[in-house]
Length: 485
Image 1 (cartoon, helix red, strand yellow):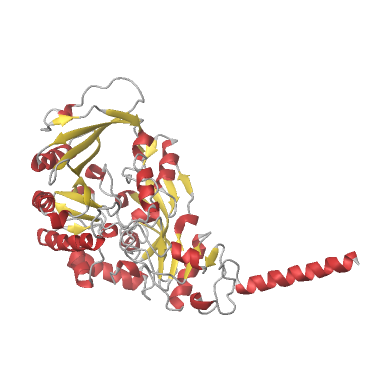
Image 2 (cartoon, rainbow, N blue to C red):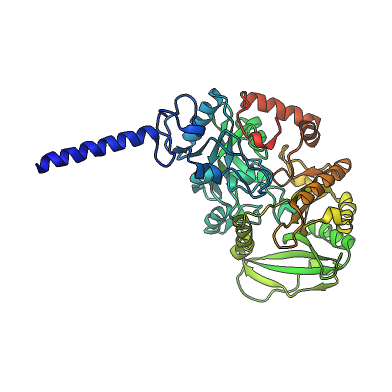
């Protein structure tokens, strides 16, 4: 009798697991898919995967928004890959069935660039391995965050030449758009320091590319907004890291002098991080100008003389210098940015790149015009020597020196302005920067029209980019949210 009950339980267990495999548990699609799954049904036979393809509403809703909270696009399914082969299989499957695909990192774009309505979003967070290649390079998968890259590199006293200002951003995410930081003035963008990529093209082919192999795919993937290939892995060049950083904050009461001193410092040898911040002052219509510059130090302790680069600067006053361990410097904004993302407030911010000569007039307009400055609580100003930028799709103005201007608008608080007014202000500003040769920084700018994208890239780069799209993504499968093709 005991044996009979045991057999019955076993048969029931078998039936339960069989039914589970057919209809899916928690929205996990079986391999191959069988039966209808309501509004998220996928056509044809699902390829065998090492990871999982999920269709439950909670998983899809979680990837239907981004940091901007303006655009909501519900995907049919979410892939959580366990291997590069998963990505290739999924892209081939999607292309064969007319579905769109996008890879999503940490969702830090503002205007739906990594979202796919009724398509498939690949969640890169499950591809997060970081390992050494030789003594002075790292291989990082697309879903690895820069904080993990930094910690691995620092074990050998090394660091990528350019780091973002938030350690929770993904490697694949920033390399797909350019990637800038407080050393970009002298080192260009993160894409300028990639040695090799492993990519899945829009045709579902896995390709290892570099300047020596498949160069056109390499260049059309870096800062390519996911149009020609999905980054799986990047080999990163490293340089010697400081042990600590001494940061100085200099106060200005004049916009022109504030910008001019940043330009002056951008050519100083041996300078550490460099940037500027414009913040609302205590009086209505007033603004504060804060230049931040640092010295990279080879020790954690000990006195340091005032740097010589301070002498020619024309600041009004200076705060006492702050010394911190290098990791603490890198990680200092991660918590606040992470909290902002978790708050799920609309973020109608804007980032543009303008020639040095155009920055004063544009900023004067913004700071003196209530409609243009609506909701702005902080503008970050980052100078950059353009000769250091070598990747063609990271578009910057044709000038020797440019400024990246990150206009941070805030929608939280009882008296916060209407987000629609802030979005309208962004559109008005885009119309102002183009006549002066300005460019957008794509993840933090509204989606452009096809004509505007062509103007953004310029005739030669647009021809090259369009040809690469047709060659590497012949079914136009990849990353529709950017609105380029």
